[in-house]
Image (cartoon, rainbow, N blue to C red; front, side, top):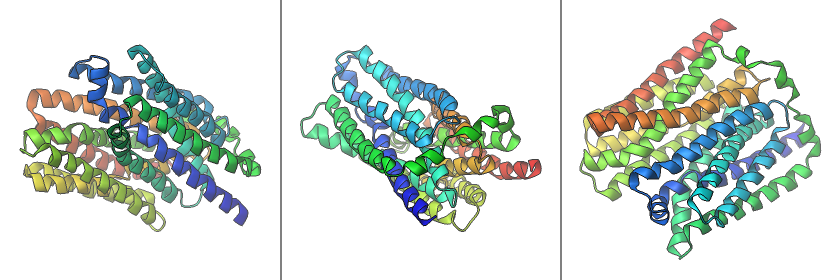
Length: 393
């Protein structure tokens, strides 16, 4: 048993490292947007095509993972998807045309969401005890990678490397990490063979669509709409409505991410001694109240505090919801991953677009109020979800 725990710990640490490197990519097209517009002679309004293509690939990747995750070994699926991800990043370095770059982004989107779902399922499988702790740390590593991404690309480009070279460097890093992971996996064949994924085939999707799971889906839709909405619209709101300088406006977004990273670390510890459902409910309650007070104040300082508190108290929503879903259906973690990650991708597309429509017609303040509403709605369903699941049982 002790030997199994040691192997599981090594696997888990490597999965965290894989997640960290993968997360760096998720912010690269955003930080290089102006360079990409100039490279391909696009207007600012056309710049959204890169996000649309990647997210389209993400949706396809989630559908594909729904077939493979319940049937095959999760660690091997992680290796296969990460290998594709790393190779595709290398190919970006050799791309020359606009169409070729978009095709690669689509394929990268497919591989990265397949990878995301597989890593979450693998971490849960490897750590059946204190699952919330380990999944929260996994998503903390993602947040740290996202925070590191702009620094990574800026340092390379400031030293004279082209934007394509940044993808090449990241691809090499990913493949090196994958090599280390494969070595650990070869030394733990007995452990790898235990996870065959066969038991999940007995649980059809229709049996997962219970009222409690629907609540979890709504929570993720709303939370991801809130999180991506903050990323997309907070700096513009700070500058245009509150009169902040560009540097200070971007700093407010950094405060949100620092709070989110800290929140995921704290929630990882809390879930070892407090029910995951309790951490989710009251964390979202505090985050939604403090974010609302900050936005309502229309004060730069209070808004920054409110945004930071939203990251701190509700930033662990995604790993907590995933943990709850896995605990409710431990024999269907692959299928549960597919359902929940579809909501993550959907929320990241629907609500920021809706916030853009509201902001264009009613102003940026109205768009920020919609962001607050997303978090409040998620909080309501966080309190409802547990009660519905108890009634079902």
